[in-house]
Image 1 (cartoon, rainbow, N blue to C red):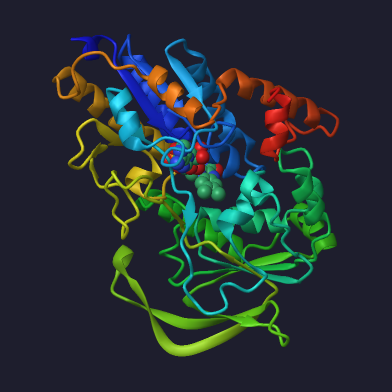
Image 2 (image 1 turned 90 degrees about the vertical axis):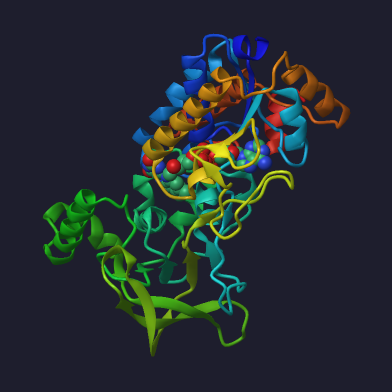
Length: 431
Ligand code: FAD
């Protein structure tokens, strides 16, 4: 049948999940056509807007994604917000199958008093700010205090602590934005506390398998007990910056400054563990501790949002209910990445799970479970978008912006200087 010969497939989101799903489908089906819709003007999701600027090697996956995007059977459709500019049922009507790979765009709130005070930010917004996410470009965090507290002990917390404590001259040759670098150069933050509810054996710095955990624990112990080498001492001395982990503490309240205008500290409830191993839960002992600080960064997790009323969503787990990537009770609808599994796991985890979703989709196609007959694909959606005044950008548009960023970074010896303003980007594309 036509659908089996020339399936039109739509992927929502151009992060690792979207690109790895597309890659699998295109590789294993010689006639499949895949359109990747993306709300930003630029592709790659958290590889561009999450991964820390001082980890450039992690971003090499962009080369593979670029090869996929350049295939004749693949198209990038940026500047399209699915759920606003086009509805999921409209995509489902235009394509044989739709894969939702839109990640986790929100953050978990602390749900404690004082959370709204100036000086309190989500780690998500802070990361978006130093990585040039347009919606966070005005964040302008005040780093004139000497102590910052990061709530949560995951990989993101470590990234944020490192960016706060790294001497700015060590970041000058990365793709961190010039604006962030300027603020970090003025920073007076000397001490960063990374606070967690549980103990050293439960931290979520990396994937939860015994082997890396063992190595991680060894590393923690080593760094805590070893004397720094001369090189480290030399690097630390002028800045005299320090960080530390505080275990068995759970945030209770952000304490305001005397004039009530901003955050001046955090009240932590002391906890102890109940239960054993991974399942151990932190319960409050009744004691509290006040930690003075001018900056509070909450890093207790990212969170997916529901995208469209027609798509089932589990608000508790924050995922689209699915069986190995098949959205429950909606034939022809699939999901991959953080919106499928929840917001944990590195790019490699996301790759494996996206390949699996791709495999399920192709199995269903082969079994005749997807709609029969031809589907219009992008032709139908293009007409809809144009009637709504939405003008998508293509992958070659991104390549123009990419070249501009690379050229702007050259003078300063940076791999790129990211464009932050969508209006300016559209202007560069002649819009
Ligand atoms: P995302 O990368 O978030 O991609 C989702 C895409 O969907 C985005 O481009 C988004 O704009 C788009 N989108 C959202 N809503 C819509 C909509 N309505 N319409 C259209 N498009 C939409 N992993 C590593 O391996 N190494 C690291 O060093 C590392 N560092 C990290 C640092 C941080 C701060 C974070 C948060 C994560 C890090 N990770 C790292 C994990 C890695 O980023 C994730 O595993 C991966 O990005 C998840 O892929 P995803 O495609 O599901 O989500």
